Amino acid sequence: MSYTFFYDESNNIRKLFLKGRSFNTDSHSNPSPCFVLAGILHEGNAAESDINELIDALKLPPTAKELKFKQVAKGGFLDNLKSVKLVVLLEWLLKSDYYIHYDNINMEYWSLVDIIDDCCEYVDTYGGLDYSRAGGKRPYLDYHKDALYELMKIDKSNFLSLLSKYNYPKIEPKDAPAFNKGLNKLAKKYSRPEARARKIVRQKNFI
Image (cartoon, rainbow, N blue to C red; front, side):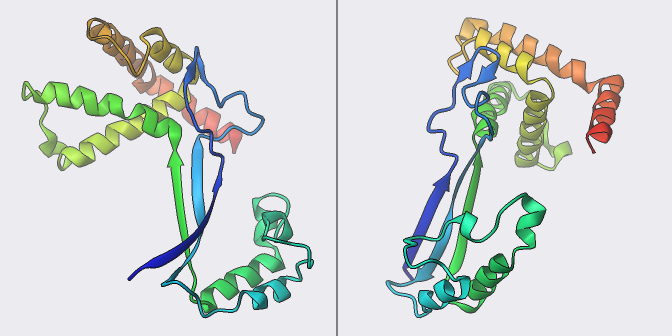
């Protein structure tokens, strides 16, 4: 079965790169590391549902060439959920022969996780890791990739400063031991109980 996709993108930063102790996106007024590609699709070359029914129900102006988010809802997230037009749109989609597709890629996360893959691949040549305690290699990798990303968020400036110092991702083989040592030192700093306690306090204050 073939499908016809309609999609739009949001927050396409095109390139993510280091600028000392930050990413190039950190200077934006509303920085987000996530690139989103989403829209609707239908089976085959044509859909049976009449889009004009939705246009009429939403009472869009005749000059509108496409549906914009501001025409459906405004304000913050909770305000959006209260939008009557949003309900109209979602109910129409449920009754139609259209489907929703959505893909969200965290650029920062995927720019860092190769560090875990490379470390494990290197240690595997010596048989130095036992993945069975973690339930296999995949769970082990996923856990440590998430932990690495969490570490970056906790101390972003020092984490990125370390990456920048050794020209990540193009780290020279001779610099790999020093880079790993620096990363290990940073990880140990925030793996101590008192460091985790400070993080919990910050989260409670935020809430």
